[in-house]
Image (cartoon, rainbow, N blue to C red):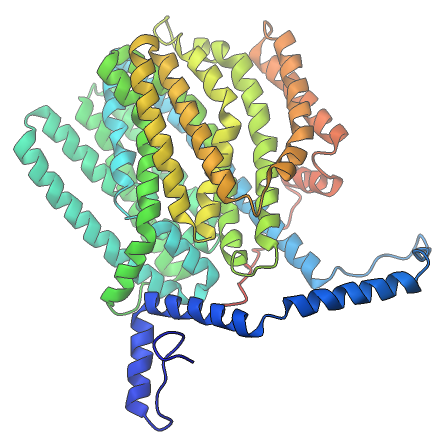
Length: 582
């Protein structure tokens, strides 16, 4: 042990020195990380026996090959003899798969209902405010997630990762997260009040004040939500989501009926988020854990430093998702803003499918990332496979049925150009899905800085290309810039995940799914002039048949999906797996 480099040395009877050394190590996570990394390098230099192990492996392989002339025939098994129980590894994989599948489907169902509620609210507001009025509403509402991305400092994913790896320390993580959230919230309120008081006046100041308060209550920065996800209680998260959405829709409907001004319609989200925040805090306190731990500034600083890259990345994601609205607001008109927003909101709920899978698998990815046994790569491979199975048929649906969808939802020709935007966004849906998977896979590996680099590059591309295309091409130019930015993010993230998911496995997984989705798109294209419900049903039937024919979904997974669809599945809770470190 080199004192101060790979560890700390104390005298055998130096109790005070030992206490001081322990306090120093406990209060300085960066020091522990630096010493641990240096000690690992020193140990590898001094005790690396990989060459010896490889030589032994080759020698034993040569001896075994010389001894056995050929593979022994497999023993015949009687038909009435059943196989023995699966081993621990198989049981762990099956349990993890059931848990992830259950959580993903629960969240997906809640997101589907939430999307329908969003759709109902959008139709209410669009028909009540017309295209120009709804464009103004969308302009203010688009700022809520942008400001909310700053409200947690990016610590959410770090807190979830820590809770998932060591659930016993959940109370300490909760306490630290609440302290940071409270500090950031108060600071943002103070800065916002000063900025609004000195630069804006009149109705705009009131609207922006409502936007700021709503952003601070946004569920994405809710500490209770992080705890539920880390403990894999996505059923409770789904209940909170539907509660919030139900309150929001009821208040929006009341506001439209009472002909409230814009500030009243925006405040519906404020009240809904506040209700969700309060109920979530009660649930976590009574069911999971309660905040504990003393105030340690060094620990809070470390947490902020770890989370800041991801927080900045999420702000970049939200901003480049709103670049189209901002540029159309600057170079176009309210009608174009409304058309782009309608296309974005009609395709965004499908992105929630990818988020459901990614959030459900994140605790498992976080636990397996530190094992080094290949479990992370296998879990990521399965997540990507299901993202492809889900995204490609959605692409076919959006490309074929976009005009019929717009015609059924909105009266008049004001929103007709949104159909073209929906088609283009549908073509890029798979890339968007894979980027959402990378959003959680990279922080699980502790590589959130790499995701920050990807999102900053995407933001720069979206801004630069959008500034060139939007003045001339309007909504189409905004969509083209957005999809190009998503492609840039995909390339950077895929390169960062290449050790766990290369091009070859990706192509091998995608090939049968692409064939099945192509057959679905062909059938739907031939029937596109028929009733949309009939076209959708025929397409989904062809897709399911093609998946079964190409083997994209193995038989045991098909049976599991069938059990989920018919409700014939175990209802008892599955205990989350725990990392070896914990």
